[in-house]
Length: 98
Image (cartoon, rainbow, N blue to C red; front, side):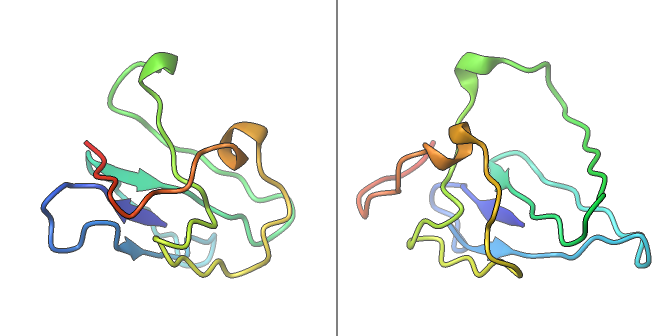
């Protein structure tokens, strides 16, 4: 799942979901100013991703998986989520992410 965070974009806060599996062998590129999230659909799934910068904890941001402004429908009920990811605030109607 990727979410468009580009201010002024006609698809701002829109999202695209792509299923990645061993069978379809797809990959997903997430450009700058897009958020990403994923849900594993099988036990034992492995996730690998690459980043373009070194990890900088103070520069981190996030979105809630259940934020009503995003309207994301996950394939399965969310059963496990980190405390950090569960703790992101909901977007407000006035909020513009930069």
